[in-house]
Length: 555
Image 1: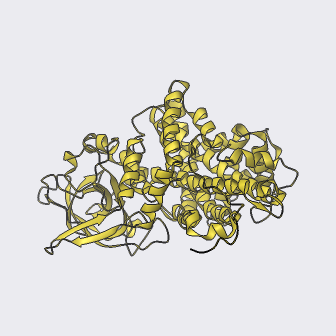
Image 2 (image 1 turned 90 degrees about the horizontal axis):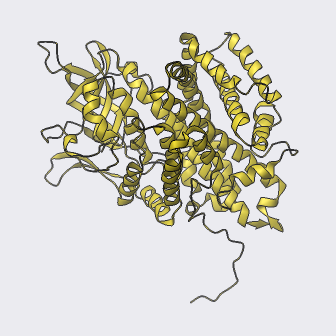
Image 3 (image 1 turned 90 degrees about the vertical axis):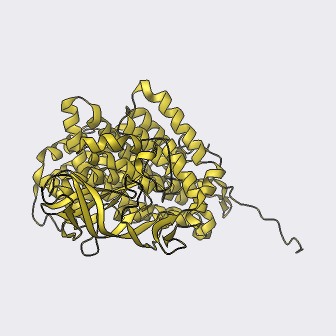
């Protein structure tokens, strides 16, 4: 046994055994703001229980195990027969099961369902991000399937179920199912109209019926062990959406040849795959030639989850950084008391709170679209048309630098796997790429501006609710209107425009709803120009200590 050489002190305890939901004022206040009073106690109780679970040592270990033990592909069984199965670590199934039970696939049919689910997604996404992919796609499949009422009636009860049933069996025999999506192909990527996967009507003689046989490939298909997939393929009438089940009603397996699993930067627990179809059976969803229009609601819902997922990563990173600074001493004082560290932490906290506040506002708009009064419903639908791609572009773009800066707050400890920070950093770029990268989002905003003037009106009405409350915000709104009026080189400067739209929207929300010190710091830095080019460059005259204290994960 080695002799004791010295006593180790100044060690930071792990951030564990806390309520992830209740320890986040931006999240709890957003829930109180957007959920009707009659439902608030129930929602708080559900989210508190989920938050305590997410902050527990047991569940945090599950996240680590799921990440450290990635899925394995088994293309054939012992007899050489093709089975195309993916094996996951038990931790993956436990996380997924708890998430489904907590309602992370159940938003469309209950009051305030989208805000409740988005808040839960923000909480649970801080445990481990990979397993949230099938949760997101399952949730987002509902509006696409509603294009075909018969399909929706058959599938929606199982998609929104609180029962998790892993394993490949006919969907009709399961109490709950999960969905995936197959859009992109090798030759086109985001340009799905160049897809070459073909769809031949099964009853080609009569030209009737909604059953087709698909042949082709998908370059990116996440969570291939799901029960069903929404897939784009070229039918005689053009690009069309299809529902492709993994197992057919008679119990035989559909042709779904998994070629390989992707070796990804992050998101290691999730099986992203390449698949081949060879006369694979599917049912048409929507009309032939309307594939993009049919699946676009699914894409929009998953884009909102990209915003919420990035907000979750930022929140967990900031929580870890503030927690570390609270307990760590350097150069004779706690880090949390040192002015420069306070500036960095406050800057990160602003980014995190702005992302959380925006994500919940979008979720609340979805709830209104689902069940609000007619005029309000139309306005919120128009608002979402612009606000979703604007938020998807900006929040996901801000995630990676924010997580990297938070990692640096832990110093060398943050660069070590045991801290959990490297996993967060590897995950951070994903949401900016998934469901359309930055250029795709920026160009989508331009399309909405050019084709749907009601969307811009709704967006400006929203940001205008804070007009007069902060002179920096007012000036930023005026500058934005000037930029929107100038169409010169609009495509080349689309990113610049979308960034300004996002910052004005976040500023408006924070001015209306955040504490004065948070709104003041955000407007001074993001809108007023009193900011450097790295985190930690806020004006020193602001109440930064209060901003950091608000971001502290435990009291």
